[in-house]
Amino acid sequence: VNTQSASMRPLAVVMMIVGVDEEKGPQVLKVDPAGHFLPFKGTASGAKEQEATNFLEKRVESIPEYSFDETVRTAIVCLGNVLGSDFR
Image (cartoon, rainbow, N blue to C red; front, top):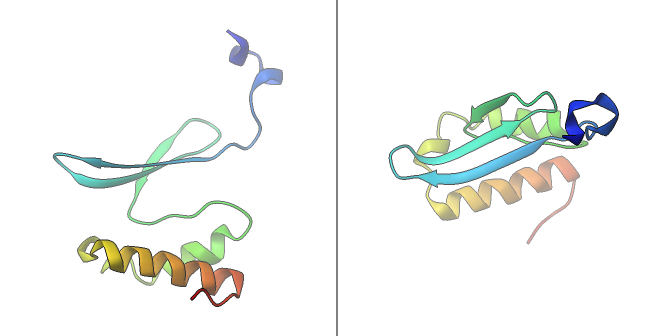
């Protein structure tokens, strides 16, 4: 098994798993480089992770009630806010 030695492991890989469970509904899991996974209502990863996370934390209370369109709109507004671009 190649991943048992430290020299063969990928460095700083973060993975987000998004899916829909029949019992729990939509689920977002974030897996960190150590292999730990945590559930989130909204999360970000990458160069401007903290700015995007701050944006989503302000809206975390209303996220579970969002429709599909509201979820997509919030993601686009978050990208625009973090990247400083106007997505239209």
